Image 1 (cartoon, one colour):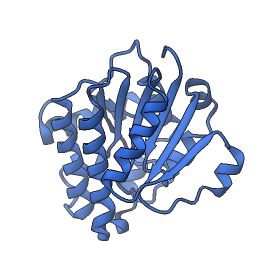
Image 2 (cartoon, rainbow, N blue to C red; image 1 turned 45 degrees about the vertical axis):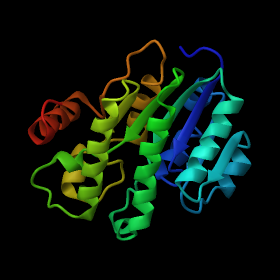
Image 3 (cartoon, rainbow, N blue to C red; image 1 turned 60 degrees about the vertical axis):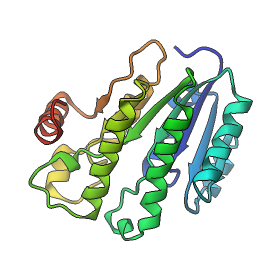
Image 4 (tube, rainbow, N blue to C red; image 1 turned 90 degrees about the horizontal axis):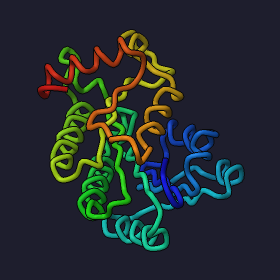
Length: 228
């Protein structure tokens, strides 16, 4: 279990999963404080009323994001901190806005490289399993998510305190293939909470769903990028 206070910092505060995660009893029991950072406008009014202990923060650019991170870390220097990056958009249509996903990816890069030296910090990137499926046509979405994974591989060489969630589509989904491998928000939540424990080694790749779905994802990862 974590010692001292437990801090959860989520970068990418607009996703459906973020809104789910921050109100769960398991999250509230595990973490004393929650900070949300978003590169875009957040619709947090309803959540703010229900969860007044959550701090909502928008950032303008990379320098602003790092400055805000440092303020949080300075005021919680003895706390154990988990960063969860879900900053790249989950909706394919949003990838027409280049600035949006560039801001998200640079946020991951900056945070890990700048904060890696601290022994009290862990990082988890929520990625996508679909980028490893060879028969899904390439497009801007897949290219960006594949770059995100390569970024993770580079960062993993710097720090063993970073893990990548090979995340299947989260229900509800419309495509047939998506429905076959989809997972619930509770399944993703469990993997993140389980990997936030200090006494547990952080896996480099965190697989989601039932064992058949995890095995399928491992096969695709091995075929695409090498051993999964």
